[in-house]
Length: 175
Image 1 (cartoon, rainbow, N blue to C red):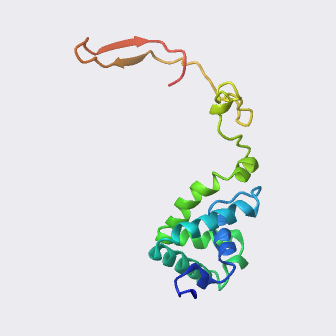
Image 2 (cartoon, helix red, strand yellow):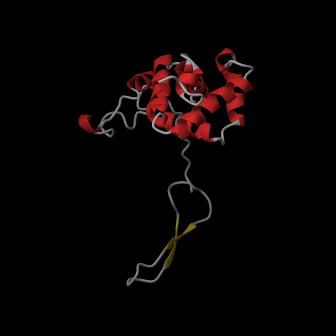
Image 3 (tube, helix red, strand yellow):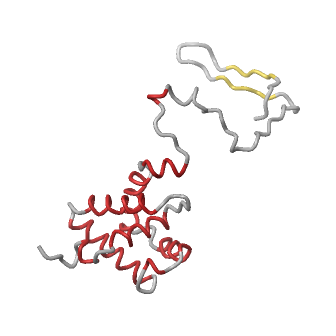
């Protein structure tokens, strides 16, 4: 069957590459190769193919991006494309891209490897014994002892139990 005006095939053979370029601008990761973005684009195109409406939204969205970027969205810089995408972030096109890509891109093993995510931990005993507290990439937390007036703690009553109590005590940590 020949492509209709609103089929993804009507956009030509580089539709996946163009959509992947837009996805990279929305989810920029310099260390993630093109493959995961292309797979996410393919997943979007596959997902919307069952709905003529959503297919038309993607087709018109890509045509619109081409128009807003001077004719070829792949020819502009990432910053220029990001600025254009900010203008359309409330459109149905953008929302379809966003919601599909969050799932497909961040479920990709190649993205996990690039971002340093080791994957699911349940089969390895969980995160607690596998570096859960290994936060060497964060600065040391600033912990100071509270040295002010005593603080008042409020303990609400338990239904059928005691009345609320107010207790004044010196605490060991800042609040």
